[in-house]
Amino acid sequence: MGERPPVTDWLTDWDHLDPQWVDDPFPIWENIRTSKCPIAHTDRFRGAYLPTRYADIREIAYDPEHFSSRQVVIRDTQPVQGGGAPPITSDPPRHRTARMVLLPPFTPQAIDKLRPKARAICNELIDGFANKPGCDAAVAYAQHIPVQVIAAMLDIPDSDGDRFRKWIHEILELGTTDDIILQRGLNEITEYFAGHMEARRRAPGDDLISYLVQAKYPDGEPFKPNHVLGSLRLLLVAGIDTTWSAIGASIWHLARTPADRARLAREPVLIPTAVEEFLRAYAPVTMARLVAKETAINGCTFAEGQMVMLSFPAANRDPEAFPDADKVVIDRQENRHAAFGLGIHRCVGSNLARMEITVAIEELLRRRPDFRLAGDVAWSQGAIRGPRRLPIAFG
Image 1 (cartoon, rainbow, N blue to C red):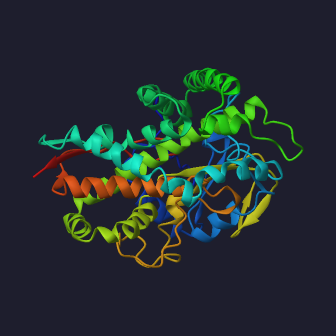
Image 2: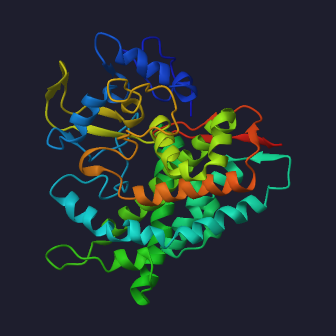
């Protein structure tokens, strides 16, 4: 990303691409939340608001009348063509049809069938570094798990993983400020999936692409090609980056918190509870909304046409919603976090993400529980936050 003017006042000039935010956003959210106005504003990004309280973020997420999902990423310029990803970019009433079609492949029962595959993937990856002094846990482990799982669900070659990672980097990071890179990534994904869609029309299989190609609207008409392409973009881009970011952040926490790592190694039954806490404390996903109609929340007027950053990670750190909100409590029992979103757009793939994160941590702790942080961590830029470089050492 190019040089950007540094932020001098986070209440009136915030920028989630600023190095301070990328490295450590938590104090920024806390300072805004405890100020006289817990909803910050910036003239960057053509004007955008930043609520930081759980209650305010929840109210916005449950109000699609005033806050549209036609635009879900904060960018310097208007969205480029071909970037729709239903149901996440759909408003009512179209949203419901797009969402309902995606629910059956992601039920708990359907995801349980993928658990052995995920476990095998994790162990194959661990085989590659288990006998080494250490590894980059982001590049060698976390980034491969959701790529290979979603490739199996779509029945596409997991050997294309490098292409998927390239597209994700271009669309969710570089493309935030560069329209040319964003359009190139979108065009390449469209071309890639168009070929697979045509092949499934000729010879359907038992996979998600075949399932979507055969999906129908309530009136019996088949889904339009652009709708199928948009849903596949969503599954590939959003479904991969969010999960590998959550896996990486969980490993980062354990690598720098030996007491938690040792306890989970001794008590693996606690890992699913710990995963919920990692999701709360290090929620990777920030979405956005377009103000469709002027409205007011918590004393702040939202101007029509401007954007709102819906920071679920900030909501999860609100002490009014979570006791000891800035403390990671791996056996926290009351944990209604917003890591998977709130309202009608709550993540369809939450069961899949939970399974992948849980299995990734279970297998790493089973095989090599003796890891520690071994260098500087690099965090991603843009709407998804997670470690892109995560050096760990064993022993």
